[in-house]
Image (cartoon, rainbow, N blue to C red; front, side, top):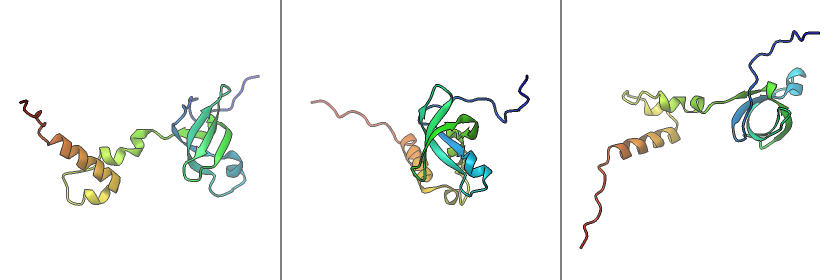
Length: 121
């Protein structure tokens, strides 16, 4: 007999330390609020399941199925920095304080003249 069920995404093997969006299937199917949240992969198991830690709550989720997880790529978290229109008025207002500090540091470092070594006697 052939399995006619369709997967919503291709199978992905997650790695320890990656950030994922996890949907708790029991909470979702019973209509409970807060069923989807950001986690960090704590451990991977050979059978394709994962132990997760909720980023905001510290809650442990054991034996989570990868079918209920989606990778949160770093490029998405950094998009505001990568696409910030730094040459327009109000650009700083649209960035988080941490993003602005990083950009300011990079700008200052890029525009500094390299220091010469101290003269020898």
